[in-house]
Picture: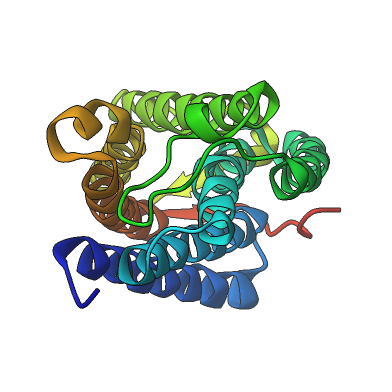
Length: 248
């Protein structure tokens, strides 16, 4: 099919996701902070979703590419991104509980999406709709996996920015306390994170104007870029009081 704007955007979002993931992986290897490992996992999932979109745009949609994109792009990636916010805001105990829930949710979702029957015929030239291809359960998992953690990320980032601007600690418990080196940078980083979460959730509203393929490609690329910038700014504005062994 050749190179199109959609394939270029999908490839770009994959590259940004990998760069984001390598950055957080490097930070985790050096500091062993669990929120950075959660972000690394999330970026790996975003990269797989972006590569699935790129492959489908370049070679045509199929049942395999759609299942991969639906699982990694609509269900399991945002929850692992939200896990980082849970660790930062609520501390290690809440983070470990959430991790166990996410492991069960991700495994169950993978089994459902892999085994769920698909209805109708896929048009290779157009991104299939989950409502047309799947029964209720995969679509419910997608709704839960995208809406709930996106709200956690958005509200948590907005709340943290508000707390920082008031001179308070951006955490819910003392176990998650961080030393703020630059309140303005941290507030800016949290605002960018909230904006990135909102952009990633905007593909549905853009689909009517741009088409589903184009809207997903654009929101993935811009949303990941804004999130990357926000996490870099916020991470450089704080230091944790202590490191915590991840996911134990």
